[in-house]
Length: 203
Image 1 (cartoon, rainbow, N blue to C red):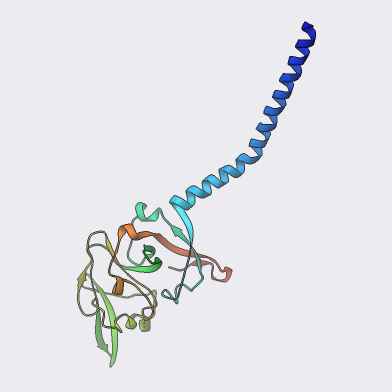
Image 2 (image 1 turned 30 degrees about the horizontal axis):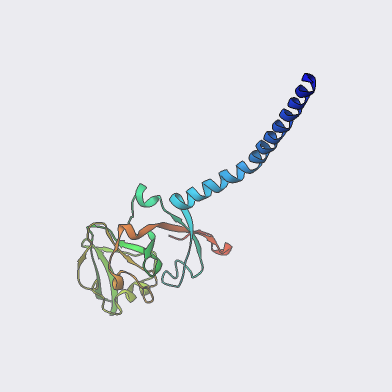
């Protein structure tokens, strides 16, 4: 009788060990995928995430439908700089714009007559700034509606940023909505990864 009980115990242990081994194998099979999912979630939450360009307010730099990488950490690691392209969270959705002025900057767009032509020029802290990322024709459209920033100096407040679209004739930006707060900026973006014929750095 004792021998029979010993054999039953051995069989039971063998089944338990087999079940444990099967569970271990299953975990080892699934573990790499769980790790990948974990890192994807962490990356999307804190480091980088895809963002889509909606509309033509940044044309010609960016095009409607461009898929870009939004870098979230940049905001806290190096801060938001002039000329950065940033993604802003608003109550009406996300906006992608270019930073023209940072806290403490004094800005104005002056309308001047140069060689019998009306030319608009950005003055930042008293110095003329060449906006190389867009054409002069685009810059000239900055003041087509006689915005407050045109021919009048404005000072950017603490933790505030003045942003404009590169397509100055068709952009909802700080001329209409005012400066944006640091908390409203999700991060910076400059790399298009889709469509494939648009891949590359755009800033």
